[in-house]
Length: 374
Image 1: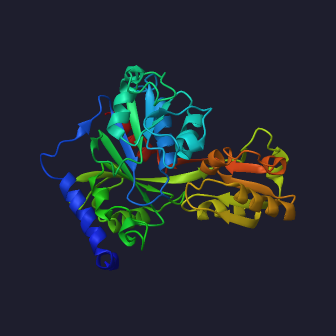
Image 2: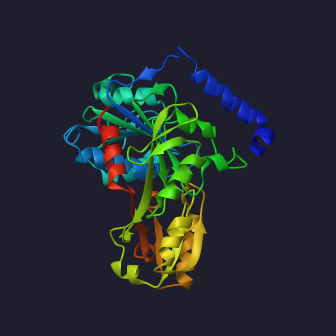
């Protein structure tokens, strides 16, 4: 309530924007192929990219879509390029954004593209032949790719010009939106009640084991009633049924950021942690089970590493010569853009691969049906 008072003009703008886009008879753009939007109402930290990757895995494993051409469209936050660009594995985070680069490297057979104008991006993904026209000849560097049969839009919940077939909104289990506040007092970039406009709500970063009573209490805290765990459905305050699902994060063994990374450093007893993400607490907690964290370098989300940052990290390595340098998958993409990285850092630098999955097989089955039956 306090944010609605102190930030009343901002709150009013968000309410007016929502009312304008929810007005009956409003015209939207539609893609020619099935589309799925993944987003949130906060400024990062809910795990959009790992959930996009999970969706890609489920689609590739499904009989309906395993032999179809999947595509991911992102705006490419903080990229240097402009307009529509196809992401290539040989590119850089500076060129395309760290998250698109991460997805492309994990799923080389998926077409990954960036475009701030999502309806335009979808159109070009479905009709790549349009990129050969005079308008696009010089703007798009990599114009050869197969036409998309299914498009996943990363972080497009606030992009309301384009109407997607399915919408998924993510909510952090550790930071319920109903207890958060609008920017800059909190982390909300949109009205918390906008989660009721999605087709499915996924509660992310849950404990691996979640008691039924705790699960029900959390659903009620979000404002839902009549929660049925068997169908993963609940009724929102607008009287509509929505899917409510729960996922958790799984960490995998350290992987080298560079081809010259020395595996022996993964057995070190000390670690220097380097992150440029919204929340690094869970990663540090995981690493603390194995390593003594001697130094922590925390930068803003999507931070572009400069030589002064590398110098600071090198200074920590000089003081702790047996320590491994550990970072995240997203940070690894941006660190690879740094030219002239000292060999002493390259051989010690690793990232922690992660993946997300549902807490139960039943939830996974319900969600798979949800994304494949478009």
